[in-house]
Image (cartoon, rainbow, N blue to C red; front, side):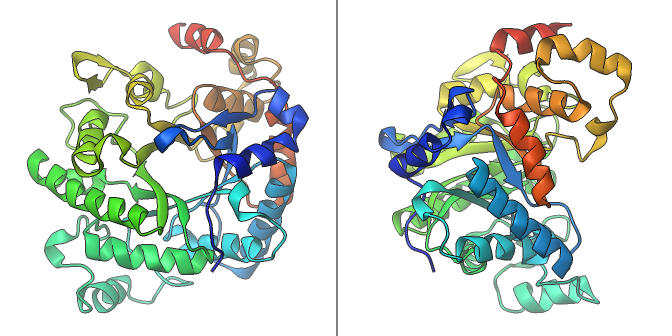
Length: 371
């Protein structure tokens, strides 16, 4: 497995090679422990969509290489994406010897039971034989028949992901949709389980298996506090501080953020120290947690913005012209990195065109959201 991890020096050297992109504001400093500051791109490569087949693997491998060659040095996966094939595609590219490990931020997730290579004929039987019978997951720890975040399960998943990616150290390791557990538990029991998971992840940092950890969510940060799936960022950070002190490694939060789902900016649902509530983006800034946007194109739905919507949006998101341009300009403006699914090299080329533009200012985004 490749040794090392992303470093401030390595990512800065990477960004320096893409002077025009850097001058346009494409690279941003991630908040790290002890003053560590990676240079991360405004657009990152996501690997969620696509069939679990060789042709899609080949497309992703070409896209990953084009991204790393063109100025995108953050790669995002999850062990369950395409039945572990997305992680393995990343691993093959990174294992080619063409790229310097310290220049690349590699992120993955664990929580949902993954299959291996393809969908089994009987998914429930596969989960039972692979995880329950082997005591990697107790039935009482499983939510919705598909999710677990118990430490012994996370340890297994982390080892599998390291093998898939071919990396000794993963840069960001997310708990994947922890709100799946929250929906079926009392708040106290949920946060007790979360504390156990965080304790394991802090040990994984100490052992050099991961560099940072976080929560990659779908709904948890985008709902009201009385919703059963609600996640309180400040309480999560407090748990991390209890375990790791002020230098804890819970430094990343991922959630959908796009023109259809702007809750991270506009929904005041997060207390920090005391009410009144602030937005998720506001809370993350105060807590020194990096925010990564997923679903920047809303699973392709934003490609279909009509002419009237585009005419309205363009003044706020200039020099964007197309629906995709507008969507990416919005999502990348207020976060560390906006993830975009890129399964072919031509996707990378199109998105790098947007990366070369200055992102909209906070004032422009604020005006747009107030309309």
